[in-house]
Image (cartoon, rainbow, N blue to C red):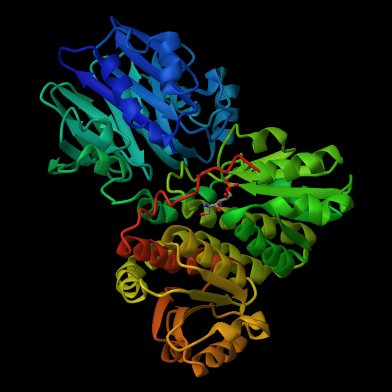
Length: 607
Ligand code: M6R
């Protein structure tokens, strides 16, 4: 997730406006920053890696001529956060500049084709294909707008872009596919931005672009057209009533809720990761003699789920280990034949890094899955994959968890393919469902949010919760427990359901809430027995079920339904959603701030 901004003003210098707007978008990423302006037929660019203030101190971002320009604050996805990878990116002649938020899936093919045509690339980014594609189209005597349109027809993936050209210095061309883009309409200027807060101090009049739309903005107006059929779009101006703080959260009261709602898009991003890194990692995993999945907190729960995925479809044993226990538990066993797959959203968790460093010194192979390009984990991993969730501000991990699960499931599938263990049809079925997951999650949020609010009211004063699941759902249960505990401060217990009768069941008394995670998988039959055991002792049963599971519905005091059936290895991605919402709404009911739970930090960099 990056932030883009464009400004075309009647009588003002664009650079200071862009600089200030990028500061307001900095929450979307701060690996690098850059601005391009046009003045007297020439493009000026200042860009570098680092936070906006640091780069500004070095380069003075305000001191750029011209009343039209674009800017970018980067959350690195393709290419490390170096100066060369900072946006704006340009064509060969420096006549076209582009800023982009999103992922161009087919950039490798496009880059090869463009290089064959003689284009010279300066960065490792996916974005840089766009100015070169536009350049190629302009060579064919197309105007800027038409060239952008043709370029966008060639790219696959997600984008919000803003483009300027010194050959047509009277306009900014911007476009959107999946990544957000909003126009801000001022008295003497027009803006385009990834998010409303960027222009809110300048104007509260906005027009939201939809997918596959291009906008051409000029100081005195704008025009929106559909990329596909070039039809004109008439859209009413909206008046934004949000305060700056509300706008930063896109109107959501908390970042956690915003991030829960971002999950469908984040999952779509995980389906666009580059094959070569996933394949390489899958090859390492397939060849490994022993595998440890090492992580802390939520990332550990993703590893726990992954151990079931690898076993179930790739017939591969991968041992999940809590990072802070790794050296004690497995240390002496680690050697040159060990492979560590470390999972860390931040890539900076001290416990995880210590475990990884220990294993590295014992010559183990280190693989990393993280959300942060340039993090320590990416630097010490032999191969790493970046999950592309964008910054997560809420302390409670939500969108990064489901994205981790999606990447780990894709890895398991790839290893399964290499090993030829799973039949063609089953494989196809899982792959098909993988593609449907973002939509299923979107519907799950929509269909369960009101229910979560209602159930939260009912449960907010409960003193203790149980979370139970079998098989891969025991990982979902653990994660649901962590979400509830960390933001509501209600003690909670999570167990594999089969284990509950070996002790924890003695805690059950009438009215105690027990949450069961019940996908329709091989564990479905047995979990009914566990529900009966708890029900017989007066527990209040809350279940997460697949839509239409009438039997469990009847046994439950409250239930959340997941629309659509899912293969076992994918079920945690959807089944955790209602429980994230439930934890969130209980915290809100209790008057707590879910974004900043006491005693916790987003990234735990101490041991
Ligand atoms: O950045 P990491 O994934 O390594 O962080 C690990 C844990 O600190 C993190 O998941 C923590 O448990 C969250 N607060 C969970 O919501």
